[in-house]
Image (cartoon, rainbow, N blue to C red; front, top):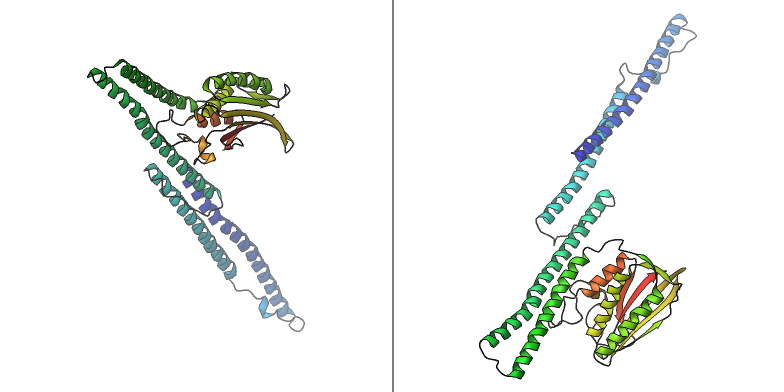
Length: 369
């Protein structure tokens, strides 16, 4: 309703503008006409009284008895204003029709037809925003489809294995002590995989509810990393990996962050390295501070000597449901790195992925001091 009122105001304004201007010109020219007619009358009076002294006025000075010229000008301006107003309104209505049809297609579920426009105004901005919204909805639906497919397969596969072994035990097909122990180990392993994937689904719901402010406080990142890396070294030794770190940060290098959320970030990155490396492989954390564009930036590299990202694009490593391997035998849904990026983004930090000098994957966290 408001938009219709604006259109009516536009039409009225464009119509009244030539009317006011034309009326003004009409009054001015009419006054000039009356003045000129009065001068002609005086000429004629003096000519009658003094025919030998006063010459008749030039023919061009005489004006028709009716002001036709101002009327024609006024009519032309009214017609011109009406034409311009009509064209503006029709163009505006045409653009609104395109926007309306696009919103109806999106509402009906058609997300494959892009809205291509070349308008460089507010309506064009609205059209481009609709295009971005359409793309975001389509990507969200694709993620939901991948989630459903992943849940169906990744939860169903270990569950099917567990049920198969239980039926075999029930039917007496597994009787030997060694066979039964191996069966129980297999069932336990599949149950743990199932639990891991259920935990990932719960983690996904927490990912969508990360608070904007968290519990951020000043944190001496150098001391924090030393304490964290000590626990990582002990855990790596139990797994047969070689973990080391280089800490180039001082106690004066402070950032504002939530320590508990940072624990989640680095633990996720560390366990990701453990998952994709083998006994004897190296894992290295290197923290330093650099100056870029008059700003001091803390850079933390986490490298490993594993197989790396493989065919996975570094930009896709942080997408939901991305895995370094296409195998369905891996635990989890590929949510870890997506969670890491979300937590860091809320705290004003960034993370990128690439190839490590050790031959495996490298994850780089950046934070401004």
